[in-house]
Image (tube, rainbow, N blue to C red; front, side):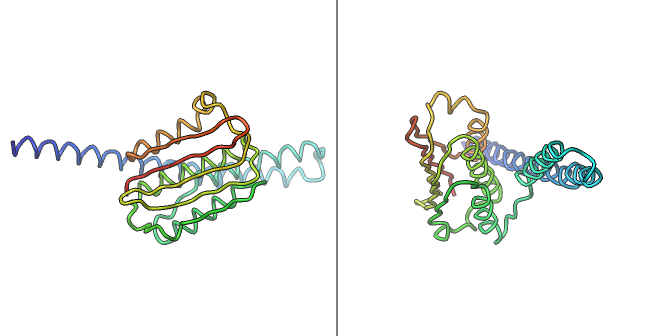
Length: 210
């Protein structure tokens, strides 16, 4: 019995360690891609634009500038995430800067003991909320977004809601962005619940064990 219990514990520990390593490797890959896009692609494009200034037609320069900004956005979306005391300020800055035409209300963030959340879960939460805000800007047409943080025993709860156009649940679940968010949350044994109807906005509950 003792050998059986020890083997089970060892298997669980190795499985958890492997899961954490996968999350860290994914974060390192995202950071490396971000740096490469910023340092090489975006800068090369900017230099080309500078050389064409006053020569190329205005509509072509406008298209190049649009591509340049898209490139910078991709770089920003995959940039490194600070996991120390700067985590919360960086997260809040990202949420606020991502909302282009919407007002955002954030509550409860200072009531969370962020030191209890391990680095892998911080990365997952950051990326999921970032993806959620990007999807909101692209699809929801919301004018108001609310994000409420709270702790309940050993759970971190994040409640997201907006007053956008809403979706049919079938169409919502078919998107790659939603699947990516679900996969991230499930990788840390969390839960992700959606509530939406056409014309009634979107509500999302994220729960992550602390």
